[in-house]
Image (cartoon, rainbow, N blue to C red; front, side, top):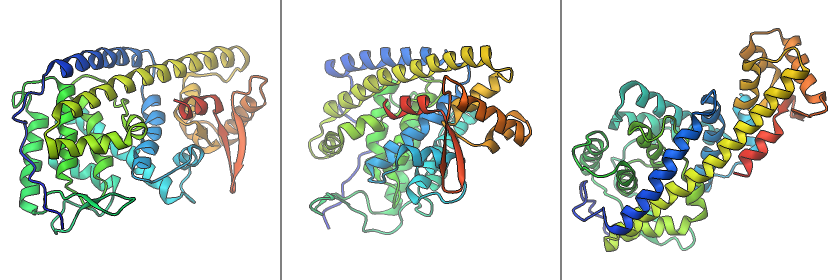
Length: 357
């Protein structure tokens, strides 16, 4: 087995505020600030958490070669039975993200035990490693490219150091977005669990930005950026270990924050414009219009009669009448499809925004 890597404790002993890093930081901070402002324009931010988080779950899983279609993903969000394993894993990711967000809102800190709880949802029955033998291989050549720490006590000590780094702002006084890049590198290098480290690590990115007040809700999803630059992601992680190339890694991550924030602003504005259009047109043509109706249509791109019945507190026949009226409207607010034994009412224009983001 390739010699295990001796992961140094945080903070790094090198300068992480070089000219190139600070230039990239300035652009990332500005884009993140703009995103935070745009999100406030959506009256119910839960809509963004419910919809965009599922897309992030899909992308994050795809990095691990767990592939789910958009339709399967959103059907699974309103269906209990007949859900594929891939869709279930995407759902687990979204659930884990929401759990982490609730922990941050409640406590304002993120402990090792909290990370374990998140991981248990992401990848059940894969606890902190106690047995040696875990290696990371090139999937094409099967060559071992990285051997993380193997000793259980060492892993626990590294996690304890990481917990302090996440929660103690005085431990390393640099900008929080730079620290997010360092935290992600460290977590992936410790590789503390038998499975799910990549997905859990990407959840930690978002939770840290919320904890630091840079975002109000976790909607900066870097997985799409990683997918587009997957080889760079793994190469740069490894080059920090082998060459100490911290600057290249941090600049790459900061560029990811900037790019993803700008892309997310476009998505948020498109969703807001579509919500405004639906509000105006449905209110002027249908007596059953309500804010709760709009929220339900936008929280669940795929919805069912049972969802509408529950969310609006109305009778099943009334819910069916509302949904079918929106299908039959000349504006085609929804389309109706049958999958298996179930009928789904699809906000197809919202789905297109999410698919093509």
